[in-house]
Amino acid sequence: MSRMNFHSSPNPAPDAEPAATALAGVRVLDLSRVIAGPWCTQILGDLGADVIKVERPGAGDDSRAWAPPFMCDDAGNPTGESVSFSACNRGKRSVEIDLSDPAAAALLRDLAAQADVLVENFKAGTLARYGLDYAALSARNPALIYCSITGFGQTGPYRDRPGYDTIIQGMCGLMSFTGQPDDVAGGGPVKAGLPVIDLMSGLYAAVGILAALQRRSRSGRGQHIDLALLDVGVASLAHLGLRFLAGNGAPRRHGNRLPMVAPSDAYGCRDGRIMLIVGNDQQFRKFCRAFGLAQLETDPRYATNEARLAHSAELDGHLHAAFASRTVDECVRRCSEAGVPCGPINDVERVFSDPQVQARGMVAWLPHARTAGSRIPTIASPLRLSESPVVYRHAAPDLGQHNAEVYGLAANSGTVAWPVPSTEPAPDTMQR
Image (tube, rainbow, N blue to C red; front, side, top):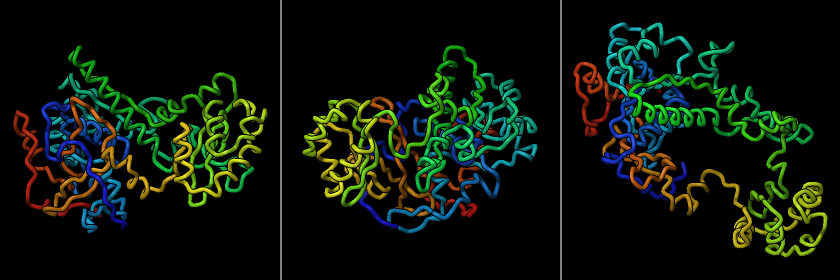
């Protein structure tokens, strides 16, 4: 693993609990697994909520077993945790509860009676078998906000189908306009490099929960949030979906080009590639001056965006020639000085060495649960709240790390303060 001099996040110290966190005092039961639900609850935890992650005894969240790759500490030593699990579960408490055990299900109902929010991503109807559905839990706790995240929602002909991110990327149309055209070598539908539907679903779920909390502050009542990954994918079609609904046909694949702006594409330089988008005629004139292309500035074929689109192939030929002999840094500098949007196409190593990323503190280091004195990295929240900053309590928990204290919550009536992290390593019960 390449070791880098990451800058720490400007956010509060990992164990700090600022009195002014936005969601201080909000308790969340997280019954979700993998990405969408855990991403939602991690956002809520960063904002100050107490997130209790309910996991299967002995196995836990499916993503605990999605390894390698494993996490490494600040000395480069593998720690045994799955990168996939660690990315979505910092700051949470982990408790093992077997939902099929009647006594354990009763314990979970007791926890739900004290909770503000419950997030789950079981197939529609599953939790009703254990008396853990919204109707049952809200009868005892009318203020409960209950968020169900599924592939296809609680209604409709597909409600019983399982749905993973990539399946939904295909079904929602995203893949149909992602990638190169069919007549280009390697052309055809392509999935996004990240599980974008899962991540957007987590964001939408968090937004819905925040809206429900605001509504509850006025009405005193919770509500059920029914969030479907397919709905999120369709909603996220945005202007490309509206293009079709407005009678302009379905969008096609254009590779890295924007079909409504020219020039806009990925261009090769002497030592890498850049992404360039010239958004208007004034920017095009500035671009031509920055690269000594006066003949293009005065050519009527390139005078307007519409004209440039009509002659984009010829225009791209000039740009490829202008960039090929120059470095990425020179091209980005010339564009930036001229006020033309341009940036390098970075690999992830270059992302985390970028001075802007470092200046914004997009890496934080959290104490490791098992090894005193060691730390593991996390990618920081992008939220910079001036009055209620985000907080990172600790790294993703070991399986069942907080069993005793969470069981105590159900057995006793009161809430407890966030525990001081133990100096003893947690039992090594994580599925590998």
